[in-house]
Image (spheres, rainbow, N blue to C red):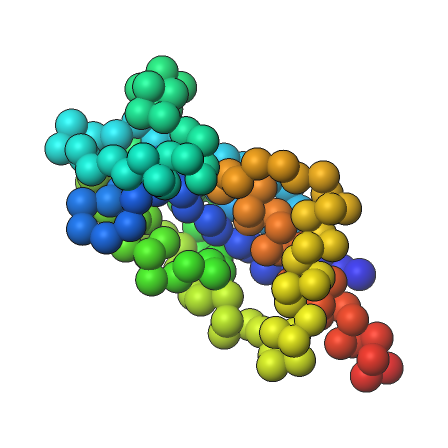
Length: 170
């Protein structure tokens, strides 16, 4: 199977949901299935923090301060890897607002386009999605809820459901 057919998947972990939330980790999976991940050092005025969100992703503000990268460095890397491409997100509404916030803070233009994953999916793929997703998590041995891991799970689930449908129609 040609890896060029594989979509680029973007996933973002955040400080919480809603007003005042911001990106804390950005991950993506490229067509060759390689994954990249960046912890984000919060801007001074990014103060919202939801302990429930921290419990899910396991990233503390202290870890972000210690290991995070500056927003301008991350924006540059994202444009380098994703430039002039369409990337897909299963949380498009949230992810678009968080990535826009990051690029705004970096005072840089985003040179890639984000679409909802659901624009790629056929109804028959949705029927297969949850079981396939569980199988992917088990097969890949992924234990933690992090941006690059989630991007890989979504991408592999998409690939497997797409391939199943292709096999059925052949």
